[in-house]
Image 1: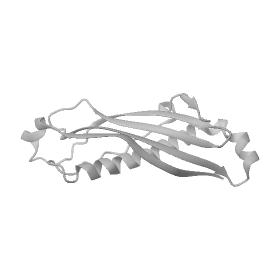
Image 2 (image 1 turned 45 degrees about the vertical axis):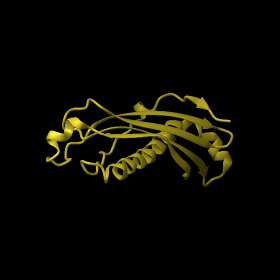
Image 3 (image 1 turned 135 degrees about the vertical axis):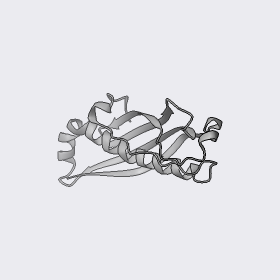
Image 4 (image 1 turned 90 degrees about the vertical axis):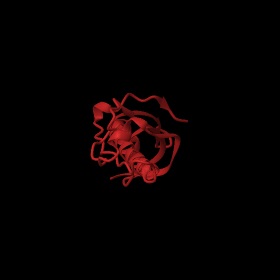
Length: 148
């Protein structure tokens, strides 16, 4: 069985801005969820069995009801192991590349959702909890780089 461990993650960029345009709608609740765009980049170290993933979430197509404009970028580093040892890992690593990246990206999107919620909790229009985001294999780009 595969095992994917998150080593660390950090936010190179976080921007959340309360929108003046929302002021007239502020008495309404935050039930309308904003449109978001998710972009993903990643690199692999086949030798060390490491995956590095970058996920960006941007608010897009804003309307007056959208209380916040935001852009969040998170970078995560993951280590991959296999119960049957290194040989099995070497055989299957390339075959499951995009599945691994999708799992890593989903973990990082969860951290973005939590961060946006925390940043907006004391903001003028109250906390914003982003909807879950489905990341299909077709959303995973080709590898951007090989890690050393």
